[in-house]
Length: 197
Image 1 (cartoon, one colour):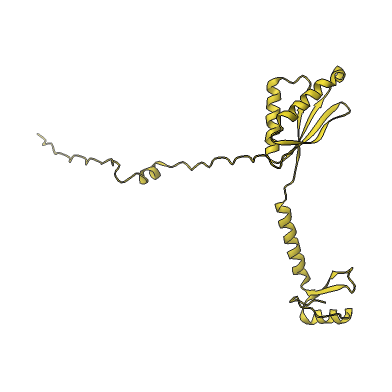
Image 2 (cartoon, rainbow, N blue to C red):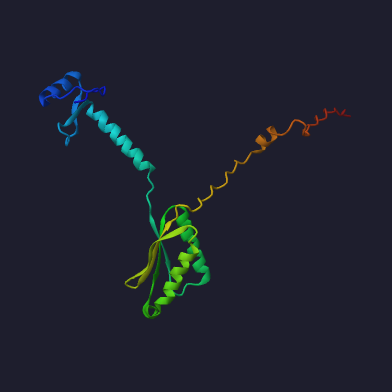
């Protein structure tokens, strides 16, 4: 048995340990039930649960949830569409997500599966700098797909440049150097009286 300060109290009977814990105003918590004899600790159980929950929340906050994003191609994809979808896949990979490159065959396109494999293999080749293949291209029904995962050694996405906030006229005027010419105001002419005749 261990007391609230972490000191060993030795082996006690369960009723004695419970009585000792209640006298000190704490709970008796079984720490290791499989040990022989079982290890118990005198502590505030509510505080123990709070700290355990707090550490679990901190651990969940630090972990990254990986999402699988899908980029769909077709056998008749045009070059510009291919480049756009490839760039989108690269953006997903640089954000740390996995990418599922899928290609669906329609009707007679099933007779020319080699065209589909060529497109998916081209995607794999073009993204090889930022991606590694998790699942090689394979057919599931009429869909051909491959899953790409971000590389561990891939260069990280550069941080966007920090823009300074725009200054107002007053801020620019107050920040003007001391030797800069300063606009001077000219005094208004004094009023002249006109004699009435």
